[in-house]
Amino acid sequence: MKILHIVPTYLPAYRYGGPIKTVHELNKRLVKNGAEVIVYTTNIDGKGVLDVPLGKEVIIDGVKVYYFPITFRLWQYSYLLHRILAKNVKNFDLIHITSVFLSASTLGAYYAKKFNKPYIISPRGSLMREPLKRKSSFLKRVYIYLIEKKNLAGAAAIHFTVEIEKDEYLKNNFPFKKAIIIPNGLDAEEFEEKRIPLGFFREKFNIPFDKKNVLFLGRLSWKKGFDTLIPAFSKVIEKEPKTILTIAGGDDENYKKEIEKLIKKYNIKNQVIFTGMLLGDDKISAYQDSNVFVLPSYAENFGQAVVESMACGLAVVVTKNVGIAPNIEKAAAGLVIEKGEKQLTEAILKILSNPELAKKIGETARQLVKIEFSWPKIANKFIKEYNNLIIKS
Image (cartoon, rainbow, N blue to C red):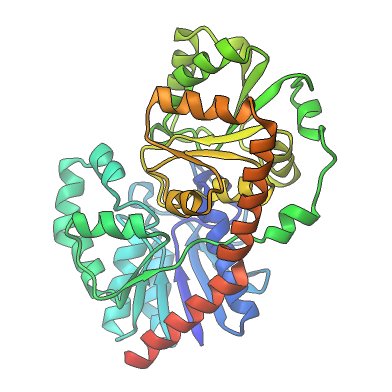
C-alpha cells in the first residue's frame, strides 16, 4: 500500500499546534504497519520558513517527507509542489489530504480525480461551526461554494476525529460520500516512562512549591476561551489565593496582547505566568507539576493536549465544545462543563480543594487514554479504511 499524505505544514513546524505532531505520529505508525507513506508538504513556518532540505527525500521515523518552497503564503501555495503533484499522484494507491481552504486540498483533490485515485480529506476542525462563524469572510464563503465543496464532494471519505466534528459538518450542509471517525492517538508509554523528576518545571519557571498550579497548554487563540478562563481564575484565587495560572503556548495569532488586557482588567498579573511554547521534557514536566489542566474552548475538534494531560494522570476541566468531552464525561475521567465563568470557577475549585478526587480522576483518565487512544489501534483502523477505499476505487 502506497499512501501520499498532502499537508501544507509538517514537522518541525510545531507552532501550528497538535495536528503537526499527530499527523506525523499517524504516518509513523502506518509505516510500522507495513504501509509506504510519502508526505508532500511546504517549508512554511509562520512568517518564516523551516531550515530543511527542499525537494529532497527526508526520512523521519521511516516516513519519507518532501518539503517544497512556499511561493504564495496566503494560499500556502508552492509552485514546485504543484508540479510534483501533477507528475506523481498517479503512482500512489490513495491520497490523504489534511487541509481545507488551502492549495493542498484543492490541488490534491484535482490530481487525485484526474488520475482516478481515491482520496480522503481530514478537515481537522476547520469546518466546525465556531471557526467558520468567526473567520467567514465573503471571499471564504465564495471559495467554499465554488471550490471547497467540490473538493469535499469528490472525496472517497471525510475523516473526523470525533463525533462532534462530524455532526457540525453535517449541520453546515457540506457534502460527503462516506464519513470516517477515528480519533488522534497518543503514545501513553512515552508519557509514563519518560518521567522527569517532580519539580523540574516549577524550578525552571520559578513556581513556588507551596502554590497550586492551574495549567493551560495550547496555541494562544480566541477559540481557546481565555475570555472565560481569566475572569474565572480571578474568582478562583479569591478562594485559593496561593494558586498560579500557567499559560503555555505559542502566539502566532498575536492574541497574547488580548489575554494581557484581560489579566490587567482583573488585576491578576502577579499570579499568571507565560512560558511560551513547551516541547519535550518541558511539556511533560508541566503536566506533572500541575494540579489541574483547563481547556474552556469555544470549539475544539479533538483536544490533543487534553489527552496528553490525562496520560500523565492530571485531572482535566474542559467545556462541552471540546471534541473528546463525551469520552471524558462517559468515563468520569475529568470534569466537563458548559462554557461559562461560574461553571469553570466551580470546577477548578472542586479539583484544587479535593486532592483525593483529583487523584481518582487522573487515574481514570490514564486508563481511558490506554484503552481508546493508543496509536497501534488507531493505525490499524486507518489501514482497514484505506484498504476498503482502494478496493472500491
